[in-house]
Image (cartoon, rainbow, N blue to C red; front, side, top):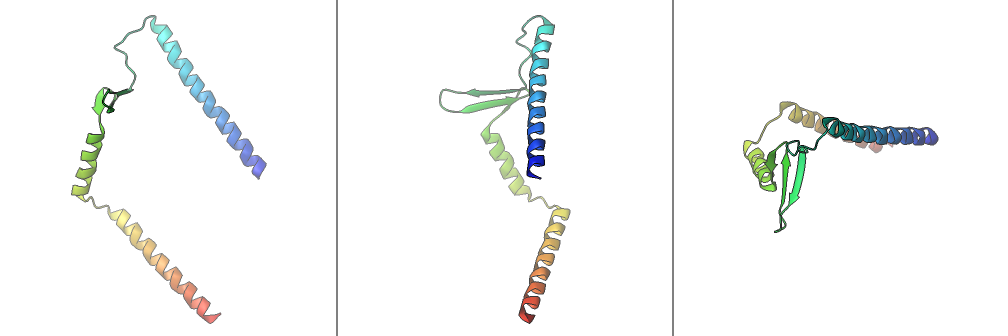
Length: 111
């Protein structure tokens, strides 16, 4: 079983590396096919570090900063979103856990 898993992991790793190499080759070929280097074709993700230690990132041309993430986190805390299925799952899990504990205690008391 260990040898099988090792073979599977190695094959998956080799295929993953092959996919990455294929994507890189496709990117290089697309640039060569254009025939020129155009600055308007930017990378979808750019990360720049400023002189004062701040890091600025842009995703698809939209600037993203850590302050934006903090604002979104605060907004989510304010909303207090309620997910019915999540709360139902937690309740069922608690019920099953407590029943299992009681059954185990009952069986261990007889032994």
